[in-house]
Length: 434
Image (cartoon, rainbow, N blue to C red; front, side, top):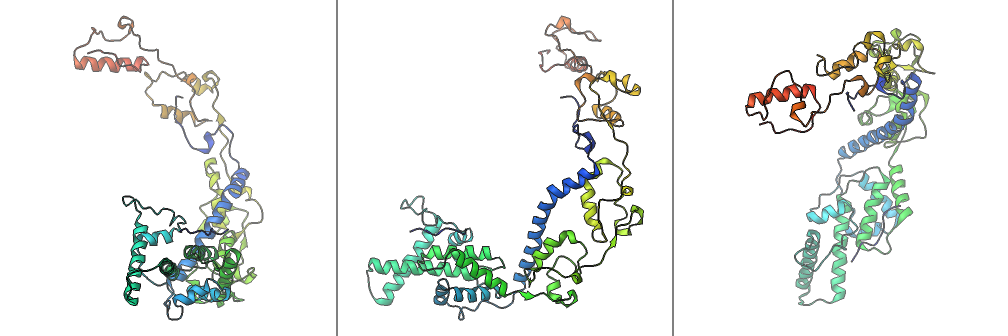
């Protein structure tokens, strides 16, 4: 037995600052274009989904009327899976009512939840590895057979009777899953649930493919309300579903707004009445309103990556026709790339290099901070540092300020020796000194 129907269709430290890139400085135009081309599309898609999903979830939570099984009993639901008109009515009813809470065996319920099409393919006769859902469905079938025997006062059943009971158990599980499912205003998800259940029941004359999707989509569209001509006519309970204010200030979120509204209303586009009339962005950044006054002017080049986000915030208060005015930027002079040789550095740095870190009283980070006042770089080249010689293998060639007798047996003397050679030599081998 299988579900045989398919689904629908070097030295130094590394910094992450913008000015540290060797590929060049980020300009205003580059910052904005990068945001628009790489970030905007992703943000639109994420916001579209989040806002629309929020509306759907809230609508489902606000449902009060329960699913009455007397109005939609098992046999009627079974017929609806074969008839477009009946299925249309069933979906509309499901969209307007809370789901049932039939208790299904746990493993079987999980199989339905994840729409596992290997439900029956994993069955086995090896009692040591029988999956939980096989035990559960076999127990249901055996119980149904015993009930049948008791009802008809018989002790043996033939294959035809057992097949009928098997089908009835399948139908019961599938229909319970349908009535237990929350039907949200998503035709694709509704189609997947119904299609899986039809396959589980092996319903040969059940609706398939496009017919299922079109029926679900039509039912969803027919539950939508006509959009009021004026935004003030939107009902308060609908306003509570939305994550944005109406009239709309920020048109950058328009796609997400439309996606959310289309879960409640039928609309092709929004009229001008649904938008707040915004002033033009002032030419001078200090003339903007208090809510966005702290965003500009941009001084640090590393803040250019934030420009797109700032524009998004301003969009709620002003409309912007072209690029931001020059007054919105007071960028500091570009830093020079760090030269490859220390001899080429400016005079105030030239005397510092090359540096012997063993004798210099500053850390590599402090040295980097000094250089970054004038230059941008990712690494300090090795040429800027005096390289330590390797620790000689011959102890007679080791130069130290203090005198040591080898082998060293005193622990304190050994610690002092290691500290001294660490400052003078480059060593990756710990010699036996004690």
